Figure 1 (cartoon, rainbow, N blue to C red):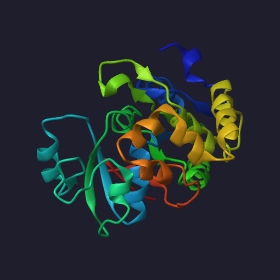
Figure 2: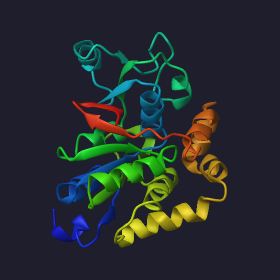
Figure 3: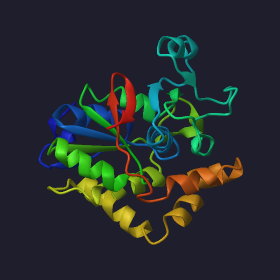
Figure 4: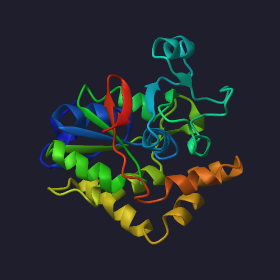
Amino acid sequence: MKKVFTQNLYDIRCEWGPNGAKAVSPDSDVVIIVDILSFTTSIDLITSQGGIAFPYQWRSDTVYDYAKTVNAEVANPQNANGYSLSPMTLERIPSKSRFVLPSPNGSYVTTLTGGKTTIAGSIRNCRAVADKAMRLGKRISIIPCGERWHHEDDLPLRPCLEDQIGAGSIIQYLTGSLSPEAKASLAVYKGAADNLFDHITSCSSGREKNDKGKNRDVFLASSINSSSTVPILLDAAYQAA
């Protein structure tokens, strides 16, 4: 990876998806993963209720075996209790719940931060995440994960509005020099800040959620600073700091 792609001239960096995480993580003190529809929103809901969440690869035949080894249940459409990656299924969970949370974007990008301090950031906890990140280091990278076209792992990244808004919501609270990429995400956030729910529900990902009857997910994802929880990756699981 060429050094120019590390954004190392700046304190606050922002880059898209898996390759972005590979590019900027090595020279970072803290990496913030942003995947608001739905991974990092769901991580916030789980950890803010005292639970922990193990990210895991998407569509893996080994997910149930892994869940047994960590004494957790898999949050997916086959879950007997109705828990899945959809945030609205996780609004009320038992305290100290343990979930394995497969995700095609946020979970995968989590594995690419090279052991750096990794935080799950969202619009819900943007201020708390920024404050914690600044206490942990100066060089902070934000990774809007994006989506995959048609949700196929081998198809190209689809940069998505909601994750860029989510990245910008965190960047607004960070101090230090901003890379041009970070400034761009901040500008996108400011352009949507007057009505986050409306902007996100009307973008492509929001409309997809609405078509599936999951507009509640968008409401939860766009509820700015509704949470003060900071989920940090410790021992392969996101848990409240």
